[in-house]
Length: 94
Image (tube, rainbow, N blue to C red; front, side, top):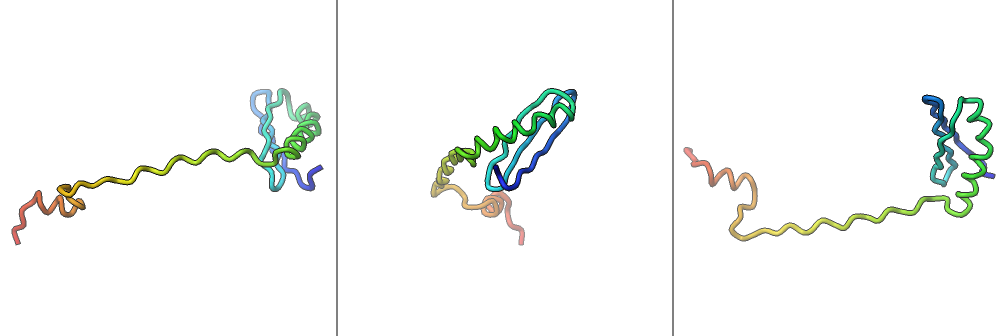
């Protein structure tokens, strides 16, 4: 059994969302029908299921990172900045 377990219950419309977490492990979420008393009766079984999951996979697999964006391409005739673009578009009176 984990040395520390955090349990969060959100009750709404006759069912509860239960989150169970232990240090160094990703949380495990479940939905249980009923009121607080019936949900509390399910907690030992939900904690046991979470501990079984953590014993084989304490962390969820990492999502693949997106590829880096392509390098910007510049043409030699294109202005290098908006300031240069504005300077060319507007005549200088001073």
